[in-house]
Amino acid sequence: MSSDLQPTVQAHHKPENTRSANKSTEDRKLAAVVTKELETGNFKAAIRIICSSYTPAPGREETLKALKTKHLSPATDRRTPCDPDGNPRFEPLQVTKEDVQKALRSFPAGSSGGPDELTPQHVSWLVQLTSAHCTR
Image (cartoon, rainbow, N blue to C red):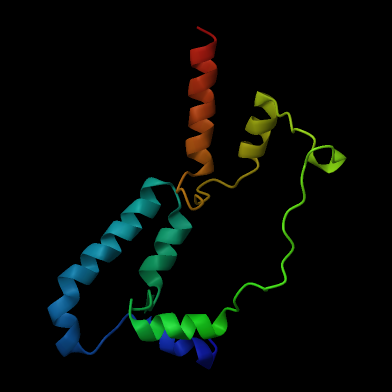
């Protein structure tokens, strides 16, 4: 790991005197994260988390400052989106149920969700439920 990341990552194993006070809280958090991964079928991620010697960076002002120095602000000269009316690049996209199911099957088992935390498996279940409901 590069030395510039060291301030934002803490070692999981802390000195015994500070670890004993927070041990049960840390263990509960670790158990919750591992349980979530196991429930979604992501066994690799669960094992990786258990075996990892790192924890998330602390939520402090120093961490935020360190991250801001590493990630640039958006460019000030960004173009505004063009108007899609009359532009052939912006024709409506039509997708069939089969297209969606094929795309969902292309994800590996246990794939994680996006910002909304919906996994490909969740969407697949919704498509199946909707298909079953519409055929009744």
